[in-house]
Image (cartoon, one colour):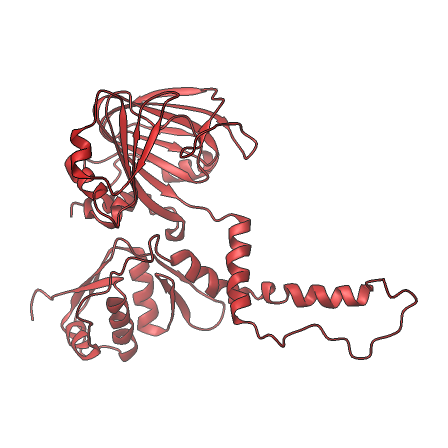
Amino acid sequence: MTQISFAKFDVATFLRDYWQQKPLLIRNPWTEWHNPLEPDELAGLACEPEVESRLVVGAQGSWAVEHGPLAEARFARLGQEPSTLLVQAVDHHVPEVAALIEPFRFIPNWRIDDVMVSYATDGGGVGPHYDQYDVFLIQGNGRRRWRVGQLCDDESPLIPHDELRLLAEFQATDEWLLEPGDILYVPPRIAHDGVAVGDDCMTYSVGFRAPSRSDLLTHFVDDLVAEMEDDDRYADPGLAGQDNPGEISGAALDQLHRLAIEKLQDRAGFARWFGGYSSTRKYPEIDWSPEDLAVEADVGAQLKLGATLSRNPASRFAFFRPETGPLLLFVDGTCFDCTDVSATFAEDLCRTDLIELPPRSEASAALTKLVTDLINQGSIALNEPEHS
């Protein structure tokens, strides 16, 4: 897989002046740009049942949406109307597309969502809209005219449509024509609209998610409630009499409030929960585990010889270092407690897609078990050593 990188991009200035603040056009910053995916390959992915895809046909005011999997013959029947094919999480299936994420690793792993790829014919687009996440729109092939506009919110009026969230009002503030290799950064809630100029227009959308307060509370509380015992209840021994039985006393309310929020204030428990929540795969229903499960003895033997490990592009990796206790490694929703050499390995695993382990006289039992567990849940693959 070809490594791609930026030749000219000031990360510090971008984070200080633009990230989550205002759009930025970045003219071809790559050391060398090559479109990593052919249109036929993207169409092939849209035909697969495990891949999320949409076909948007039409233009301003008359968009129709078809959901995948799409029949191969459907692409041959596209007429003269502008059309846009959108395929989610292409980075999970195409290593060359997954490589597009690497230059953006200055943003924490847990914020990364996926790389959506679109292919559009002349005039194709999905209409003016806004998203709740940050996105880098990389022009892969062809040209696309982008307009950005106002800051939106839940009160922004929308055009009635069963499938698309389209803005009824769009006030363009800037407009650019993007060529291959150009990037447009758009912060959350900024209105934007992209239209293909000519055919064979391909755009790679590197998206970064941000959980809402309601999502955090809902999922955290759901997990807490699932672990609670039914007899963990309010109790009031030594209850004092009161003049009016209809009053909820201040003492009772204080106790009820403590009962409701005590678990929410457990920061260590929240850290373990959030690590698992944020590292859960985008499509957890897809089973990536190998047909033949790895055995610790075999894994240990290969680690002793020196081996390389490759991360599954569909997997998510993060770690948290508590003030006390082991480092917590989170991979695909599972938490692993790591100490010593396993902790060092965990940090390396979260840093890069390919891990090179030096030959060692004896592989740590804890490290061997950790690597074996990750292989068997389909998160990493152990590559054969070059010299055995």
